[in-house]
Amino acid sequence: MSSISTDLTIKIENVSKKFEDQQVLDHVNLYCESGSITGIMGRNGTGKSVLFKCICDFLKVDEGTILINGQQNSDYIRKECKIGATIEEPAFLKQYSGIKNLELLYITRNKADKNKLIRTMQQVGLDPDLKKSVGKYSMGMKQRLAIAQAIMEEQNILLFDEPMNGLDSDGIEQIKELFYNLREQGCIILIACHNRDDLEEICDSIYEMKKGNLHLIYSK
Image 1 (cartoon, rainbow, N blue to C red):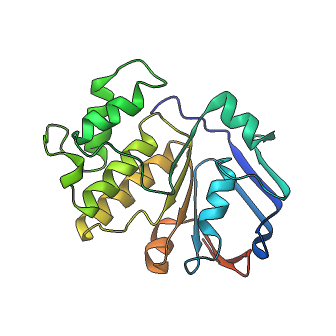
Image 2 (cartoon, rainbow, N blue to C red):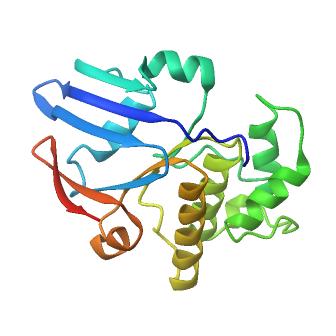
């Protein structure tokens, strides 16, 4: 992943988002830079996933700005397309193997590179030679494949929503090690997770999403 940028910032200023009468995000502020892992805690429905979707420009904010390297996030994504995310389960084709799914997704924007996809699957602890269809994958295997899909194009901004779900203890340690390596390469990583212990081990800072806003609760 040598092409990952080591000079990158995300600046979220006074971002608000409402659905009908429900204020989901209420003047959220956050700053992240290259080589950092930021954790976001909060109960289901507190706005973590909505914030991630706003960063990815899947949802438009009602107020405020999201700047990536000083550009509006929508402009950055259109030009650079360097955000990887596991906000929702990817629409994998259940009849195909894991590596076939990655290959079909990868070649929509890139030249075919089977060796790269093999390495990516190995990074997340999946066997690239496994012929089993994704429809027969366990929850943990699907989680690993989703993470592989998020990192396979050398994305320099990575958003993971509950990435440890479905993983056994060995799998959790393997994914944590992957996150450490990505941080060292200069990625900005944001993780939404319920388990504070997991976050404290790997994050540089942790925020709690509460009443639509972020509150710093931990910093190394």
